[in-house]
Image (cartoon, rainbow, N blue to C red; front, side, top):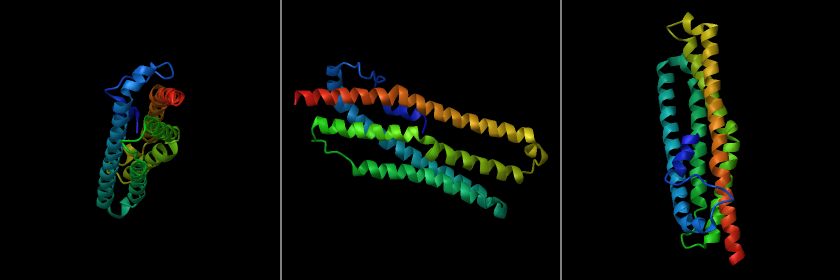
Length: 205
């Protein structure tokens, strides 16, 4: 889950402005945005699940072909399936809280706010459930392949291992930073917009 996921979710929509957004424009665009957001989260979860299953199958195949030496790939596949299972659980959670299309606008606003706050919590804790398992899986893959590589001394060289480790750390820090940016640029402003719109409807009602 990276910034591209969120750019996909909000594409065809301008970046949210936040509390300073025009209330009339928010009223006019809410229903369409409500439907697009639900569809986009569905596509994201299905895509992440499909990618996780594919990667798990690839690692399982590699480990199987390594024979006994590939036993650490069992752990790798388990970690990848764990992340995949997280997205599957998210999809069941989303299905369990589907709101009736005929519900009031205020009910839909509350539902969207609850969902966006949930997504914000996920991104705030992304290290524990996404980055850390994938990072550990990559370390195991690198260590296992290096230990049994026909290239031998080249891949066992300390500088090579250090370089690969720094590369993986850099990638994971980048994923964390991009998701923090998504919270700042997209989630927080949209939450502020919907809170403003909800308060307006409650005031009128």
